Image (cartoon, one colour):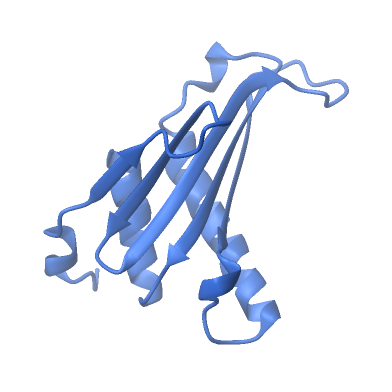
Length: 130
């Protein structure tokens, strides 16, 4: 991997319960990256026919005031890719079987970013280990 070892040695700053109307929330800072995250649920899903384990809906987006350079379509693709990485990182830490017929939403917003793509993967790894 090409991850700079100094990134992994940086101290992460974590503030919890930063959003009042969420079931749980946190603001995480690692280097030049600042992400705020809100968890809502579990709540009964309105999806018809859903009888299995909990549905997990994770998304990550960039704050409109800190848009990465590039076109809107490339920005949307980046958000979709990061949402997939985010879902993969979170899904292995939540016991979805404990919440049948329910849904949990986790929304993260990147408030500050100045990085390469590998940097965000390292941040996702850090979040998963918290």
